[in-house]
Image (cartoon, rainbow, N blue to C red):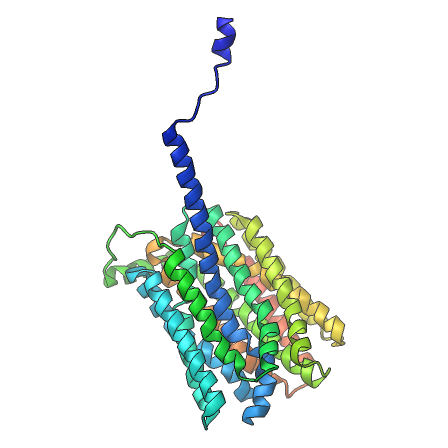
Length: 425
């Protein structure tokens, strides 16, 4: 009997201290979930601020008596300002803290929305004042969404947690794109400039969530001197420049394709098929919904498998190339929507992989600056897509599909040649 007792000892009761530690850990996990929810609101809000205007662009063109190219600049000026300021915001976030950059940026972005909305409602020379307001929104965008990526990297030590959370962040970003055309078309159905006024409300909600629910990890070490920082950054790009430049390029191209496609669909749905208002918003949301779902699934499955990240990114971009090329043969409404659904899936698969590669591959001290440079390249794509499509709308549309599919094929080749999973470690 004694032998049996020795082989099968009685269960050990958990001490009060262990129970308390377990409750504390559970509480911390709960708080972290709320923090992730709060952080995820930022890409959602920033996406609403830009993409919500896409279904409204034809109405703006008529109301303001401007050209299609001028209309595209309402999207583009937002991105141009952000491109310039994102690296500065990233550097500041590395030195003074993420929240100290994000919260003022959200306030500035909201103020820009108020200026654009008030100009459209009450002022003369409306177009140029709207552009000024949109520029302020770009200032805010520069210090908001791009800083989310390094903030997630700071909050988690485990790469699986980083990849999974970044997948949720990218899903929130793409969900914003899904919601944007529907919400934009719905609000514009009342008054065409109402989307401008809605944006400050979203910014206020996100600001409150950030203030009360997100606690950044405390920095024990002092910020490194600027000269040392530049030297470290130079060393990073000398050692890892091959795959970093490739990711910058790929991220920019994916956003170029996405916003070019959205601008094209917004114009064609109305001019060629008579699809307007809320119905157009729902049609635009279909490929974006596919993008959102594929981003979410990809973020869940990639974990820290960098080889899988490369393969999925290549597959997504190649699928995008095939779907766009197929439109050369037919642009019947539902065939076109089906092909752009595939485009949405391809882009949605690629984006979380790029986020995870670049966040996990850079040390915390320089992560804010490097990921901000990456975000700048994405904003270049956002800025370039609509005016590019606006210029080529004058020519037979099959040229748009030829160029975009060729760009996608070149991007897939860059993924194969330049991204080496062993280097991104």
